[in-house]
Amino acid sequence: MPDMEEKLARFTSAILAEGTAEADAAKKKVDERRKEQLRQAEAEATAKADAYYQEQRAQLLADAERRRSRHSMENKKKLALRREELARMFFSDVRKWVVTLTESLDYPDLLREQLSQILGLIGERRGILLYLRPEDISIGASLQALARGRQAELLTADFALGGLVVECPERGLVFDATFDVALEELDGHFAERFYLQISMEED
Image (tube, helix red, strand yellow):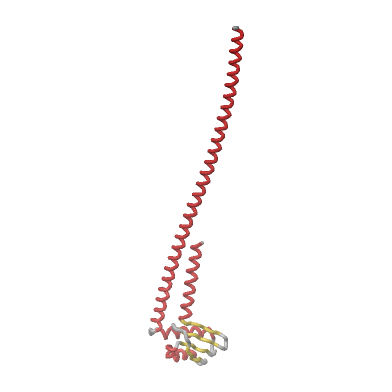
């Protein structure tokens, strides 16, 4: 009987050992699977968190850029309005200066100087048509005297600020020395510089 009990004990031990080994193997597989699932869950969570971060970052950057762009446009608009205001003030001052000049005692001398320069460009013995404002006609005789023998017909024109226009039909030349045109050219030059500077600032 002792032999039988010993054999039974060894058999029982073998069965228990085999069961324990199988249980350990199963537990190991379960642990590995659980760890793998945890790694996958962690990777997915990290990927989602990173994607959310990138999305929020892009949104914040886009919002900041829109605010910056809106702020920049507002500043440029304010600057443009201020420059237009300054331009109006500038040309208003220039116009006042021109009006003051045409009412001064120096104005007839200025017209005579302008005409002398133009006559030098036209050449001798070329007939001219001399255009003045109606209010400047009284200066016409002294201007005609500068023609020195050439025909100088005196006419009125509708420019407003003063100056004179000289036409030489024989040569097909017209010289516009009016303050009206001078102010227009100044306005155009100012506007060109203004819009060029705005374009450079936008770039």
